[in-house]
Amino acid sequence: MKPALVIGRVVASVKDPSLKGVKLLLLRCIRWSGETLNDYLIAADSVGAGAGEKVFYVEARDASIAVHTNPPIDAAIIGIIDGVDFEE
Amino acid sequence: MFIGKVIGRVWATQKTPSLTGKRLLLVNRLNGSPPSETSDITLAVCDKIDAGIGDTVLVMDEGGSARSILNLKNAPIRTVIVAICDSVSIGNQNFYVSGTERDQK
Amino acid sequence: MKFGLVIGNVVATQKDSGVSNRKLLLIQPLDDAFKPSGGYLVAVDAVGAGESEIILFASGSSARQTELTKDTPCDCVIMAIVDQVECNGKIVFNKSDGLPSI
Image (cartoon, rainbow over all chains, first blue to last red; front, side):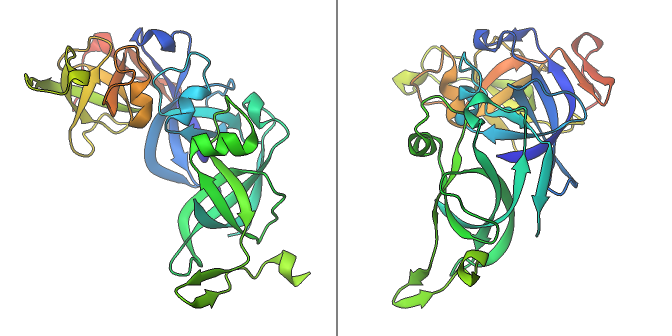
């Protein structure tokens, strides 16, 4: 799982039926230290995350398992980070 | 699978149900031959075997295998620690990769 | 997923039976400021997207999770047409206002 910061959301009315009711959030990639990176991604939210929160997400086929309809998504938020403790 | 070094822990209360009760560790993927140089890639991974900070570990990085190791059918998880490495050998040379806290004890 | 701009169509008569009867679109991946980023991609269209629309695409084996692409050779699928994007509390893209200046 990788860390990211929720910076916004994406609204789409025309989408794959399995994505109905699935919240799509705009994420900024970050390091575990909190430093922001240049990259972004859009991920489905399975935990109720909101703007400004640090989250971790899973990529690839495993992301679609996070949402019960198994939609075609390649990233899904699976947790909100409370705290990180590490030494580099 | 890849070899990595445990460098920290992550706490999360709000998380996908299949992660409940699982320890999440931060593992830095090691580069080089033998794998000993730290890299840019640090992932949060589930811990199956009670690894600790400083340990050199073997990380499964594929969803299907990770789910079967954790005995979970429908878990959005793809990385799990499956072993603590004691040594790595390349050819007939034996490299000691781990100088872990556990070994020092 | 990433943002992409539909820039064209791909027509192929002779193709694997798994990819027959589907629309292939040429897309330009975009960064979060809607500027082109990286090379183009060919994606299967699962939602009826058209040229100059901003879409979301998923890649890898997740692309085979739609009804249309299930168990077929496909590694990139358009799964949504973007209506609106909100970033840091501001609406940065609204489909009815047209394309952002790319």
